Length: 64
Image (cartoon, helix red, strand yellow):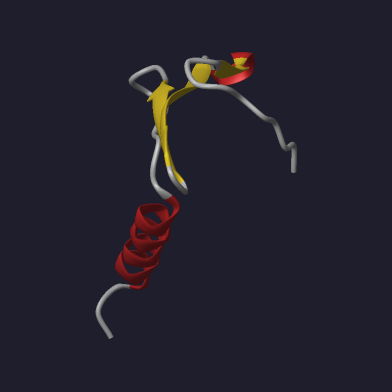
């Protein structure tokens, strides 16, 4: 895991997939991030991604 420190308004760039993450706000223990990516690159919160994977697995198994 790469760990980086960024200040308000600074960005992290992932050039291979044209992804940019910008620190928009820091409020207490909460950090607001803005994520820019091409339309064909999906971006999910982790808990949503796990749910998508779970549903995809259930659909691929078919009815029992």
